[in-house]
Image (cartoon, rainbow, N blue to C red; front, side, top):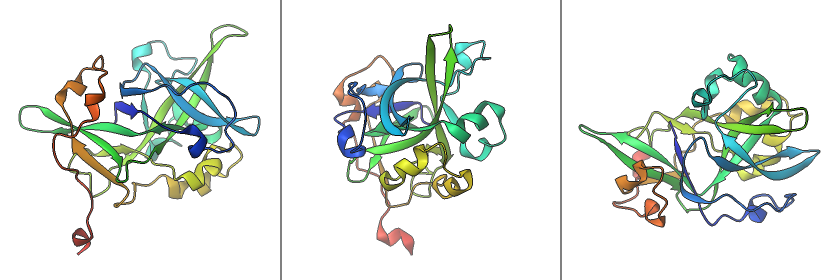
Length: 228
């Protein structure tokens, strides 16, 4: 399950041409949970850009370390912690990529998953609000995960759900019929994502060098020959 994000050199204006707000994008080559992350969501009928705490913190949560950073798509309507947020408070996290770790005999090899064309990805997520006082509050988020597709299943069993840019408004709109979102809660198309190994320095969340994203081997991607 994804536990790190790569957020670098993204144009929010291209991702959401009608975007409201001017807050700078939170960038990091190795962004970990329990940190602020930039998110796009609906506010008063407009798509806005706000930082959210990465780790869902409903009002009743007692221990911050228990705040989940991912929610399984299959249980969104079964777990009270996620159901209300999914019904009315969906968002997306724009990223340039995300990290997964492939199990090996003695250690795990990190891979950076990106769009095969290295264009931005919109990760489906949900958010909630926790009031600390009558006027102060914290908004937090959790990514939504789905089973990995056949191309990347050798690396990990779960990946974030990818929201197509053309479905952005439909996904964010709190009035959207939930049944119509089911087709979006699916593994990514085989040809959409690729992954390449990177340095194990990324294992340390304090390591914030651009070299986090430097390939140490060829990209794993789906090819036409694999379809036969």
